[in-house]
Image (cartoon, rainbow, N blue to C red; front, top):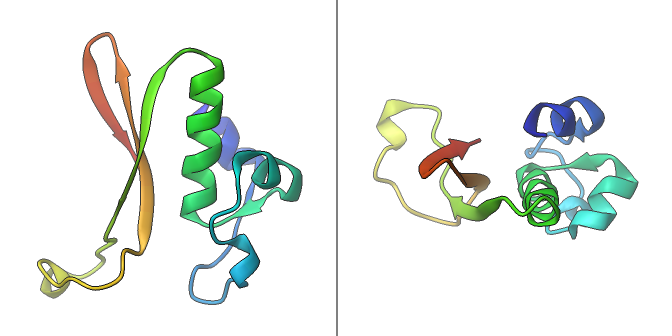
Length: 92
């Protein structure tokens, strides 16, 4: 499911995205076929719910450089955690 979402949607560069792609609900993400991380995680959660798979959306910080660790500010990333066979799996 995770791979198919990434194949079907166009990722919107978060540094240049239009505000309209922020916090779209799952159905709008599917219709638009474009999203930032929040849209990907909402669509994945929606599909997991339909499939009766336990999943949550996690909001936090994306870090690309080691000197960014521990720096707080506005939350800038969303991802999912899924419970499969009693094991937690994080998907970014």
